[in-house]
Length: 323
Ligand code: ADP
Ligand code: TRP
Image (cartoon, rainbow, N blue to C red; front, side):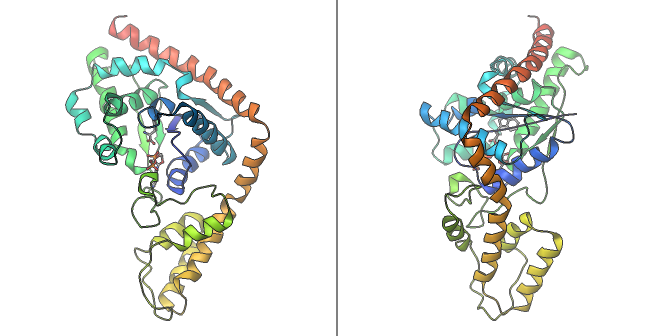
């Protein structure tokens, strides 16, 4: 089974990115042939400064390795080191009906956030489909917001197979893997955590003090300290659940219902859970920073392996379309 996922290098990673995409990807590297990449072509739709783009790629590579991506098990590369995907994207764009792209909400959402409406932004899902299909991927771990892009990928693969394979599977149709418990990680204000909403908790906040300050900002209601509190729909509990055992979550819920503690008390628990979870990764990140050439080497090795696989699928596709 081949597992594939990608993430844009568009700034500092937050808990939504971690639980939606990184942690499942890292766990899955034990379960199959894992292929993970840094989607820098995609970032050209929104990051226009070359120095920042490069820095973001490096930071993301460090973060991923620090959090447990094992280059001995997973193939890890920078998307633009495998330019074959852009050729496949063009071929796929010729089997993709316009209406399919027009229905994609992420384009509309991004424009609403102020991102320039370029052709690249509009065609973004086709490049994503190419990323997935060029590796004969079976399983794609992502957060819920990527569900529509995965559906489009499956539809495009189906259209391609219908047109050129007469029902035979030339392109493998992948399955998304979206975890229920981390489908949408809430941000400080309760909306989806996203760098666009300025409501994130980063994996590696600069200091503990900053992390604590952010956690203290998580939105709660105004129930007085001594009163019982409703654990249902509490963002605080939703976040705590990501770091804790079912028993620990149950204990916090019980304590909510019993009353007698202010929200500050629970926020302190959430703060400690986040801090402790990322402490070993922070240490690992520090040590990786001492050896920048190691990161370059990992990405170069990954690109070589990924490119060899991409080439075989692209050749199959070229031959199917008559090239
Ligand atoms: P952002 O919304 O901050 O711009 P991205 O769109 O770059 O994040 O998302 C990168 C990956 O992280 C995707 O797989 C996405 O599904 C996942 N992800 C982002 N935010 C969340 C969230 N709040 N909950 C779950 N997964 C998320
Ligand atoms: N669109 C994804 C995101 O915003 C990133 C991405 C690009 C991706 N290509 C992919 C994810 C292929 C999974 C598979 O997070």
